[in-house]
Image (cartoon, rainbow, N blue to C red; front, side, top):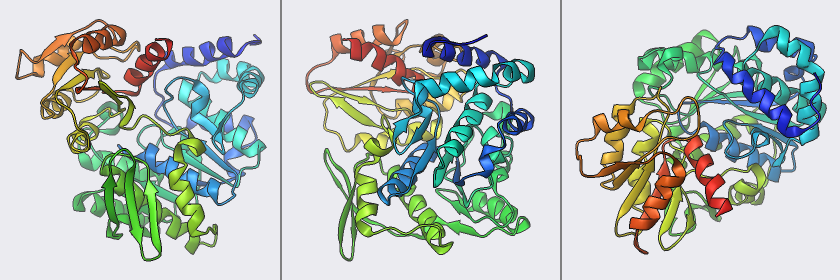
Length: 424
């Protein structure tokens, strides 16, 4: 079979999701061998974590780009276009490359029967190698130890956070999940940790000791910051100030992790940059990486905020983020995947004290709103709508100009919303 159009090619790639998640390294090793082991041909930064890994990866990549390096960035999932996952210096992988790669390895894919993510990872690594990137910043898809990206031997490994998620693959205890994340630690490769508890640090530190890897705890870094409405955080340092144009205090924790990564790279003699390049890296994160929709306001009167929090820990940060906004009433449009901790997520939502519209994004793993309401304590504080479009229309109908509409619960929620909102 030969794919002649991008849409047909991407439809085929998405059809590989029927294979489900393949949490082992056998298929990716086969695919990599067929494509001449491209992961061995570039330097990399490998980022794992339950929450914060996407933000951390994007900030690291943005600063490297401003320092005049050629930077590959691999993240997931995407919001609108599959190509968002694979970028070099902010530019998405060309459609022709996606088609050519899929056509070239089609017979091998059919024989090996890899998952969607395994093929996408192989494509990203081949693209980075062929384009001779100076660095690739690579986000783990799931867990760490057996994630497809874990064939890398990076310059530095990063674990941003650890909480209960994907229990069917990673286990249902913090210890089991921490050990899966720690699976990205390579012998002799420094490991930066982010927002971890003392217990989690103990687990990671033990693994690092076994692998003769130095563990760098980013929480020891201190930042002087102040929040500026409609701008983000001003980070002050002895010679001046830099702006982090992101919302939510958790982004300051991610920034500490980023700074620790750079201290490691500088210590290894792998990077050099000026303070101006660091400042521009923060300021231009969206332009340089396509980063967006982590608590992002897209409209006023009423305010509309999009957020991709997709587990209980992620949703727990919303209350603090909403304190930065001024509004009369909160209306939450919420949908999530069925394999998440629904009860804990609903509990976090109720703490926001808003009116909830439960719905279902157009994705096979989406949870049923009828299951969500079983966990709601205030039965008069919600309605169920069939899809994201109907939910938004209902929210607009009941919202006043000084209210806030929050769309959250999943990347797929935001994706469905933008498809409708952009056509509007």
